[in-house]
Amino acid sequence: MAWENEMVLIVRHLVDDLGTTETYDTTRLEESILVGAQLVTLEVDFDKTYTIDVDGPTITPDPTAATRDNAFINLVCLKTAANILCAEAKASAANSMIVQDGPAKIDLTFQFRSKQTAADKAVKAYQDARFQYVAGNGTGGQAVLGPFVNENIGTYPWNF
Image (cartoon, rainbow, N blue to C red; front, side):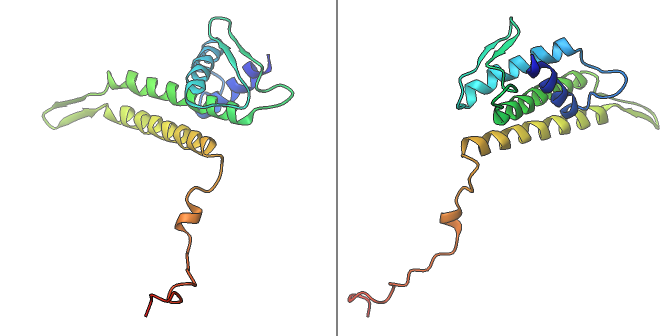
């Protein structure tokens, strides 16, 4: 299926898993994408109804096929990347420690903090994209926040 190739490549870019040696197995990324798709369909109503079979593994209809659903593809890939980066941050938290012996100090918390920052950015990117899709890609609050002038003020008989 086309979604397996395209969406795996997008997720690899989002989690920076590119190069000669890849950290994540392709089959594992496909499973992660299906889990992400299952979670996204609980949060967002799409124009199409997607059937996600994590055990299959299939997404029906294919979102990358003839009539592409870029919103579904992007939201699922962002959610999957956020899930992966959060899991990496959680795993690195176990190795996050500071060892000090007299003046010598070894600080291993930097790796955790950098992974946590990446995870936080990925979660925010997903939440922003989800909100924008749900809000209809419009400019929310433009009419409320724009300048307003009522030209009838002072023209009513009770205004002296």
